[in-house]
Each structure stands twice: as structure tokens, then as C-alpha cells.
Image 1 (cartoon, helix red, strand yellow):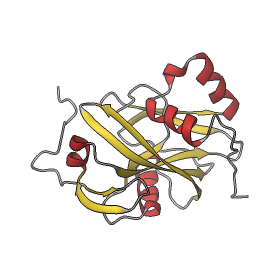
Image 2 (tube, one colour):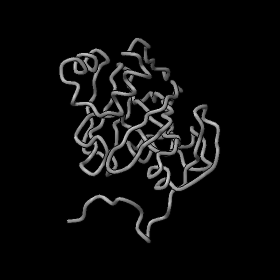
Image 3 (cartoon, one colour):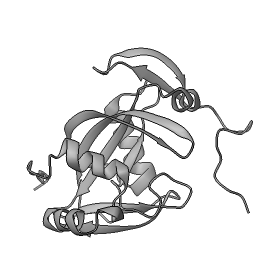
Image 4 (tube, helix red, strand yellow):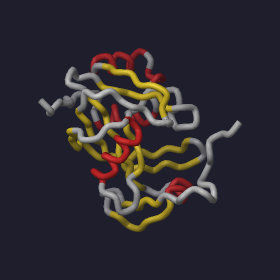
Amino acid sequence: MIGPLSGPTPLMKQEYVDIVDKKGNELFKTTKTQAHKKGLLHKCVIAEVIDSKGKWALVVPRSHKQDAGQLVSPVGGHVTSGESEIEALKREAFEEVGLKDFEFKFIARDIFNRSVLGRKENHMFVVFEIYSNKDLILGDETSEYKKFTKKEIKEKMKLDPKIFGDAFHFVYKNIYKQFKKTARFDIL
């Protein structure tokens, strides 16, 4: 059985990220592996996918991913060195849930720092909302997705918070401030 890789193999291309300060200013670039090994702050895009009925899609990551088996935001990934946040959002949305040509809105930035899967993740989350009624096409990192209203998410956070991954807890509590801000659907 082949398990998750702890780092790139000789055949894998190294992914580079820009190390940033707390304001998001680029300082230098390094490999993603080194950024995680040393706990260096770098950007990740996170996106909530919301349909015209106000339902939020959440995904369940596979066993080799962080927050495995728990509900998390459907789009999340590193901004590679030299890539804009918008370019990363569009790339990750297509890679992770098969979405392209969508409406979106920037929500906020905040720093999420944790140790998980033997690495130090010190990420500047750049959070967006994507507005789409399209079915999600999942990549190999996730096993399923479910849709919830904001009310259902709030209730589940109170009754069974462990079904949500740490990253989603962070977004929920720090970015959305217990869902006091309203998500909107702009397409129509």
C-alpha cells in the first residue's frame, strides 16, 4: 500500500511559494516544503461555493489530506510564487471542484497557523466566495460534498462541531464572525 508522501520525490516538480509579512507583502520565495518545514508565512486561497438558494457546498477530504473525513471549504490551495491571488483562485477552483467562468467576491485575509501532518502550516488565508449553481466535479483530494444553508451550518457548529475541520472552524469564527456577514449571489 502506498501512503501519503511527506515531500516531493525526485520525479515531482518543486512548488515555490512567496513568503510574505503579516500585511501580505512579498519577502522572498522558497519551496512549499521549506515553508512548511520552517513555518514561514505564505498565501493560500480559500473559497466558499454558494448557490443561488444560499446553500454552501462543503467537501470531505480523503484520508491523506489535512482535516480528513471532516467538512471543509471546497476550494483551498497555495498561491504559487509569481501567481496572483485571482489566478490561484481560478486554478484551484478548476482543479478541486471543476469550476471555471464563475462570479466571485473577495471576503477577507487572516493568518491561520497550525501544525498538522508533520508540518507547520503558517498560512495567510485569502478568502473568497464563488457563486455558482453548477454541480461540483471533485478531484482526487476529496471524497464527497454536501450542501448546507447558513442556518444548518450554525446549528451543526453548535451541536457537533467535530464534523468540521480546523481550517473551516477558523474561517467560520474569524472571517465570517459566526455568520453575521451575509453571503450574496450576484449572477442573476
